[in-house]
Length: 331
Image (cartoon, rainbow, N blue to C red; front, side, top):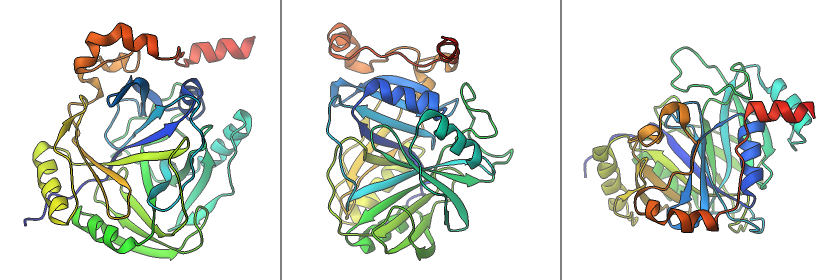
């Protein structure tokens, strides 16, 4: 078996929540990410699918959500992504602590991890999230969206995901197959039952890290949990090679599935976490002008013919805008 081209890192992370409007308000207005796509779950079109990212929807920046209304809270445990971390510029965590105080966001004490400063918090749906201070230079591929948050503090794509696993060894071998390299181990802090954290790094500048923690703590899927984590396989050829490598490792990847803005292959890794391989194209601006991303409900492929039916089944939501926010503050 030939070695596949290594993944540059995380492509997107898809999560579950239970309040569509609250999800939009928090991830746009509080965290300052751009809604780059407003669509539906292509496996359950009666549910929204929201995509939040940087200003241009750069691969490695999009956090996506399925907001199933009235869904009960889940519990993070073995076989899940326990935390998703985002990059923010060095020196900006003070801004974020003040912003969280202003917006009533519960956050924890700062942590030091692999020489970086980490600020943990939860979104309103119960999802564990972290901000990690990093050096951002002129070569950084992300494009900050500054409608609500200044460029000096704006989120600049993914930093890492943390996997909780009953037996980490097979997954760690899989990560090596995917092109990640082990870069260190240290005593875990912050989101762990108390064992050691092992970090793996991809070659890309964004979403480069996967941390692995051993635990047998039980969990359940629900609001506040991650549905799946997707890794970049930029081209169809890259994806096919990685799919074959995954299959040869003893896993059962799907055939390629067209997700309209990228093409996907899914599989459960050895510890039970749902992984996706995603191409970098066509991209979120393939069906909307860049300046209008997220401005309307996009129904890809066959779903457009069912627009009236689908729109009736979805709850009404309002996308926050700086103008509306300013007007509300003046009331």
